[in-house]
Length: 109
Image (cartoon, rainbow, N blue to C red; front, side, top):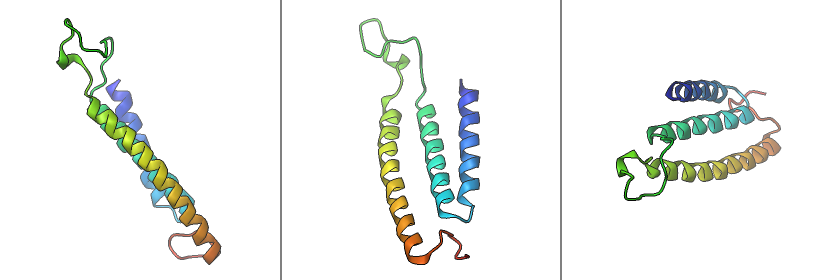
């Protein structure tokens, strides 16, 4: 599972960086979203996903066998903030395109 997660993080990071380097604003926004999703997956993977263990502490469950909930809470917060910033970027994109007539981030037509 760790190998699949590492490959997914690597592919999403490389695609996000490639899109960020593109000349159009919409591609940059999608690249930033992909990069933030890759970081969220990385943080989630650092928390250690464990299976076949009940999520409730009981007398027979050791606390060391449970998954750390802090990275999951951080990822959930990052997802909400990511949606808000993506919406803000899209509004700025529409306003910029309306004022300048193009959507290039490098100033070319």
